[in-house]
Picture (spheres, rainbow, N blue to C red):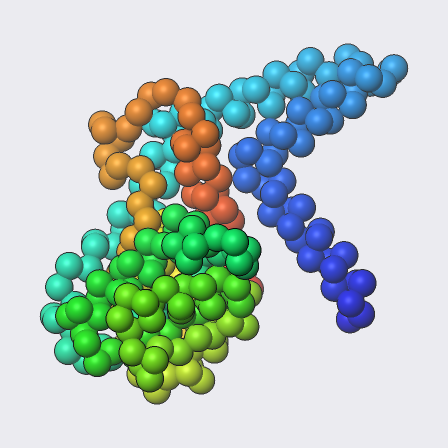
Length: 255
């Protein structure tokens, strides 16, 4: 596949991923409705499309709906509070989220909240597992930034490995088999992403001990907010993205 074809394919994949989450689908409905309002014969479709867009935004921005969606994902595995209970585990794997390569930013500011919390969780695990190898796996920029932060937090150079060539969770699991001989690992990622990550790593013959972090919303709907907010919409987007991702991975036999 040529470079141009690859970019076109990636652009189509990105558009599809955007359109399948609530905020993306609602935005597309609004844009189509706006186009219909400006057109002649299609004007009668404008109001229903815009109304559907508004309903989607309000529904998935609601704290109760967002909690119902993401809570089953985030709280499936308990927090890892005592790594010493797993003496057979000698490898900590931290999956990347997002980080910037903007050199004007400080190292901590270069990471988004998800990456920073994953780094912090991995560093905390090394306190109870001082000889554990730490592997950061994911996109090149994020893996590099997270690795640099882990070094500053005290992870020795000889215990740190960077996998900067994994574009998704499945690739991280596949590459890890080449980076470490250990089958038992501590797996650090966002709580909402943990179910898919565990399934993929198990599919690749690894035995992950979940170390979830980066929780978005409370466990129980009794503690959920009823108001609408961008935070709740983001949580709904993350949850729907994960459900679609799991369905796709099962369809393609990757978990």
